[in-house]
Image: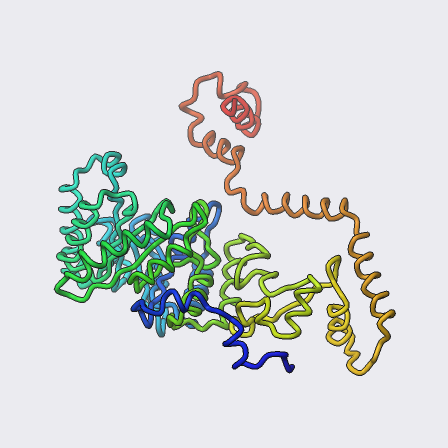
Length: 455
C-alpha cells in the first residue's frame, strides 16, 4: 500500500522529544530482561501453575530472548523444590534459571537440592520490616554476609535483592548493598516491593546506588530494579531505572503479580526499543507469549492493554481511519507488524466514508467498483444506525454474565470450602455448640459449623 508521506518526509513531520531529551545521556546500549512471571507473577491472587505450564512458559521466554527466569522458592515445600529441579533440568539454550532464598542456610541448601547454579538471596530491609522481624541493622548485615558467603562457597552465582528497599533509610540501604557485594553478589537489585516510587524518586535512589555503590565497587557489579504497580507506575519507574543505569529490569508477562501487579514485560521491552535500547527480545513473539500466559493464569487481560490487547491497534473513528490510510504514523506510534500484530478497523457509530470505502475494499474485495458519493453516504448512515440500534440491555446482560463467570474463575478457595476443610480437621476440638446435633450426618455438621462461625 502506498502512503501519502515518504520515510524522509516523516522524519521532518514527527518531532521526537524522547530522543531530544535524552540525546546527551549515556544510555545503556543493551539490557537483559529478568522475568519474574513464574515466581512473583504466580503470586497473583487465585493463580497456580502446573509444572507443564511453567516449563512451557519458560521455554517460550527462553526462545524469545529473556535472559534470566526466576522459577520458584525451593525452601517453601518439597513439591516446590521438585518443580524447580524439573525446570532447571530442562534444556534452555539462552536463559539462566533462578531460584530464590532467604539469607538462611536451609533455604540455600534447598537450592542446592534443586540443582540450581544461580540464586537470588533476598530480605526485607526497611525499618518497619526490621521491627516486625525483631532485627537490628547489624543483625541483617551479618545474615546477608553469612548467607551469600555460604552460597558462594557452594558454587552459586549470587544475586541480591533489597526487598522494600524503597522505604529503607538510605545509610542502611547502602550498607546492605555494600555487604552483599563484599560477600560475593554479582548483581544487586532495588526492590520497590509496594510500588511507592515515582519517576523522580526512582531517579534519585538509582543515582545514589549507582554513584555511591556500583561505580565505587572494585568488581564489575550490575544493577537491577524490581517494581510493583500499586500506583500504576511500575513500567514507568522501570524505564527510568534503566535510563539511570539499571541493566537488569525485572518484568512479569502481562503485568501479572501481587495486588496491582508488576512491570509488564511487553510494555517494558517496547518502551526500551523506542529509546534505542536493545533487550534481545524477539518483538514479534510477544503476542504469543502473552496469550499463552493469559491462558495458563486464567486472568483475562484488558482489551485496551498496550502492545497485546485486542484494541491496541484498532480504530473506529472515521477521522482516525482517514488519517491512518494517509499514513499509519498519524495515529499509530507502533508499527503493529513489529510486534506480530495487525491493525483492525471497526465499523460503528463513529465510522465515516473512508471507513466504509476501506471496508468495501478489505471485507468485500470490491477493488474496482466506483460507487457514487450518495450511495457511500447511505451505507455510512445505515452502519451508524445499525450500531446505535443494538440493544444496550442485551449488551449489559452479556457483560454481567461475563463478570459472573469471571468471579468463578478467580474466586480461589471459597469461605464455605475453607470452613468445611477446617471442620474436618478441627471438629474433635470444637465446643459442643459448634458441632451441631449428634444425630445428623457429618455434612450437615459442617454446614452448621460454617453458619455459626461465619457470623
